[in-house]
Image (cartoon, rainbow, N blue to C red; front, side, top):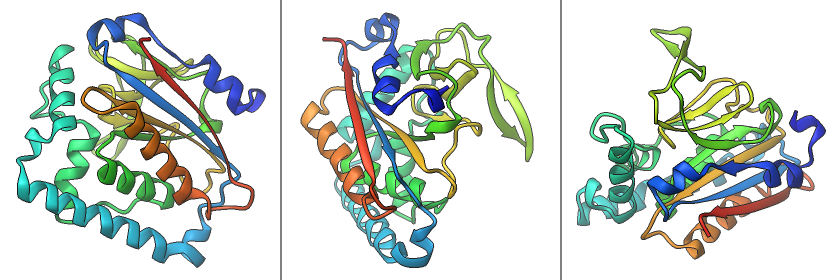
Amino acid sequence: MPDTMTPDEFLAAATVEPAVFELRPDYRAMLVVIDGLSPVITAQEGGQGVDELIGAAEQHATGLLAASAVDELPHIAAWREAYRGFGAKPQRTRNSLEALTRRAEKGLPRVNALTDIYNAISVLHQIPFGGEDFHHYQGPARLIRATGTEPFDTTANGEDSTEHPDAGEVVWCDDDGVTCRRWNWRQGRRTGLTDDTRTAFFILDALAPASNAELHAAADALVDALTDLGTGVRATSRLIGAQ
């Protein structure tokens, strides 16, 4: 469906249902669509810049964890509380920001150019990020409290598998099913970023004490980092909040 929608139309149609704001009135989502990408060029020309960004993120995480326990970092602590609010156990299912910050001290994972870049910026700005292939979406993005019947495509023991969220779980989804479980815990395979992605959709999640200014700064850093991954790279964004 995004093939028939412009980025502006796609973002305008994205929604966060009221039940999510009832759970966390302080929640905001910064949605960003970036097109004109050719991420494979990082392996040929721009790999050093990605390496430097990842190195900076790893160094930043080391400094944060030298001064504070990971679960006491302000935004990570807020997401732990949010997870408890819909029944998830944050010590077992860590939000993406916490998982990356913990891992960054010993080295961030390397997946592909787009994923490596947004993971690094997530750690540097202490904002949870999600990244998806815009053209694999079916209908606009929606953040909902799940019924428990929605399909989620993943892998189990190396095999393709379909799971279902818990009833009441906060999930991102489109018309075909869940695209990310537990708000920002695990993304599905169907909409994942690859080196073939030409238009990417990013979700930046914020709770208090993270400010809108910090969300905008993280989104700007993402756009700046991706500018060299193509010719005529264009970014469109929308901030969704309770107010």
